[in-house]
Length: 228
Image (cartoon, rainbow, N blue to C red; front, side):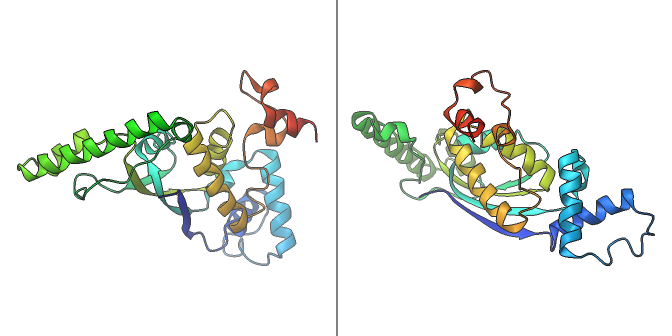
């Protein structure tokens, strides 16, 4: 099963929400009228102003929820390090595996058929053990100890725009692990459609003209961006 990412929910007008939060800082308006009278161009200008100034606390007045499937627990172990986002993952405790479980295969294995065959056989062996253990009366919450990081899972992710900007900076970089990088780009595409001004400069730091990685000068993507 391939990676699938959908936008489940979002703030009704995230760019206006950011602009209104910013206006509260810079305008003499009272709180009753702080959200009134915006034109699309005024919203765009205010969002651009605070984004480019680094006044990103205003971006926290938003919400985006994503549904993600077709990913491994290798990915979700990395994902939860982003502690300003919220998660709900499909439970291996309450949902029993039926038959050969779905699992993620790294692309590098497809280039090595003999290794991939052993990998597939190992997944089948693990599934067999799991089924045998459950049939023998072992609770599913204990049988799951044998399931690998490769086991496929699904997860709901909710975050504000500031947390997402940080996530995209770190995880869309060429140095990020391949699976979470694919997730980051899939989420970023959805965010750019939903709120293009908020995420106009989102992505790895090379998008903004510099690189924090030690091998930055050798990164083909960084070289390409710098050459534009």
